[in-house]
Image (cartoon, rainbow, N blue to C red; front, side):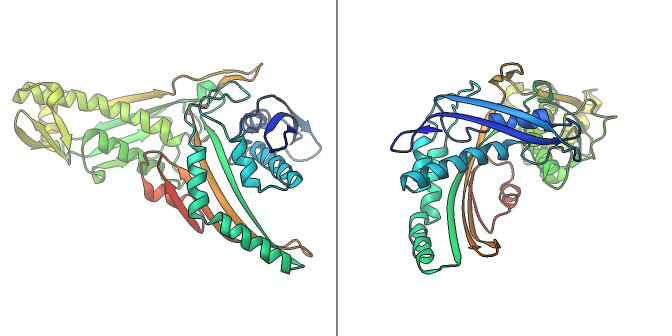
Length: 377
């Protein structure tokens, strides 16, 4: 790394080597994502990155959560810590000096045009009492020869989308029944992360019905074929948008039917709270569904979504592989026994930009931190 006296990075060259094991499996794509996350939240004006997947005489290794992103990010975080120590500065000050500014580009050529890392880190620094705790940690370490405390504020910028362009698509199927109930099937896999809940919420919102009216059935490729993996933090985005597309088509048919039956403009028909408002009158959603069936209106629809604006050149590793970036930061305080290496997490403060959360209870719960806060930017 090249850096100036303030700790500002001027240039970087890194070589990453992964232990693939005896077969390639997903090592190549994992390394690609690691390279795309070496910059993390920092602008690197001049950078050269090299990634190698090493064949070894061990079991074949595959991907796990993060898919290379944490491995790439932890490298630059370790480097910035080293720069801060060399200059005698607080590591947070060095990190802040190197944050992306709006519009600067990543090493792979994607503009960072949704950047909120400065505001997010400033809020976390204040709410976690970082500066006061830093002084307390230094005082503790000066008087404790064996047990030492460590404190770090670490940000993250994580790209949301698959690096493989054609994986960024999803389908869904929505049925409306004459009793007002709705059945949804989509291509995502519910594994305890709340995906089915979020997709049901999207459909309920689109059709203006209570959440309890919507039921999601288990994923089945007999219904939704050619599904992409539920991975890369895209499950809610892809499948939610596909289900929304299907529900919107049904809503538009129902609105046209209501306008034809009761008068008024199709665009003036409103769906909310399980009630449809049209031409000065209101009727239950189920009643309109029944009348629509009698008028031979299609009450089911398939939906599809393809993430827009993506491009990726596998040869040059340049393009726009991510639709957007997710931002977050954490302050972690640990206690370390320098004789045994045993350590304990004392406190963690986590702050994420979740935008307009589909379900805050799920999103806060998934942060899995002793002390966590969700932040909407």
